[in-house]
Length: 296
Image (tube, rainbow, N blue to C red):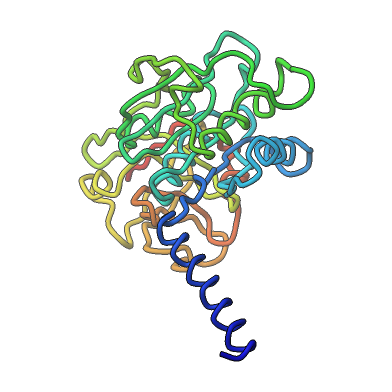
């Protein structure tokens, strides 16, 4: 056999051995994805530090940003945004959730686990209300004390010192029981969000979220709106706080002239109050949590 043939067979044998080893080893498990939701905004360094400490804790971590633009301190709005975004992520995702006006106080840092093996890391201040209601929780843990992460320790930046490192460790495959003490998931704090009601043809609910366009997204479901007779083309009055506007029930924003008010059922199946190509929230100085009344 010629030398060139020997070398060729040697290379083939080496490749075959590698292939056999890879097959025996089986498919490599990808690190869990970490989805991030905060009220940090984008103008400061906080969001970058949070991501940086996760990469340092577990360099193979994969990070997806839901938003850093939750209204500052508004756990109710953060809860709504998290509840809407979480179902889009695959089972096994770790969510690091930080809207934490009580940082450094006695509020508990926790991990919530759901039936889909999704893990929610954050403060026990009501931020997880939506997930508790719709995410099928199965277990919860109070995170152990200080987690070694950045040099030093702060009572005002638990995103860096607790939540980020814990999320990264969960992404690496650690079990939540290695990072916290089991607690009853039913003991986690829930926000007191009034349930929407219909009385005759009057709907009363609350604004859950103000999006970047100034649209007012309520907790009134499309089914409840149907019960109140909120039909396309109908003209209704909308009271937000001490201000009342006239709006038309439409299927989309462009069904009215620019600047006019609309009431519609949005993509998430909720009633939304908006102005076509204008900022409804700014016009009536509305924010998440405000009472919303829609009637004749």
